[in-house]
Image 1 (cartoon, rainbow, N blue to C red):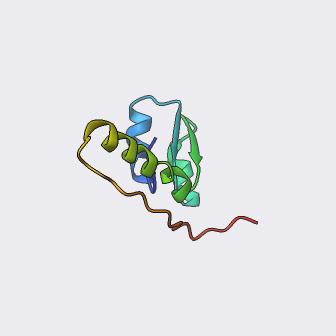
Image 2: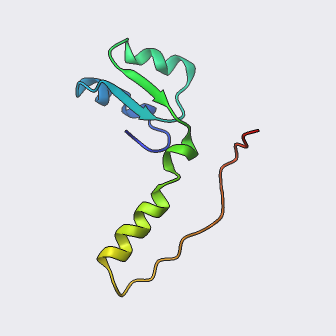
Length: 82
């Protein structure tokens, strides 16, 4: 799995023997680079990164008691779902 635009790592996932590769921003012809050897799941750029803020917030607050991280509440996803 690679959050964000990760099509550049598909060959490494295939070489590692992965059954599936989850990432985002694949172009049409890049799906063919899997050569039917693994499943490619393009879950969307923002969607693959949206939980990183909470993850990093949790890691920082658990490991650094004197550090006060602030989480942004701004949604930067340019895609709107109807």
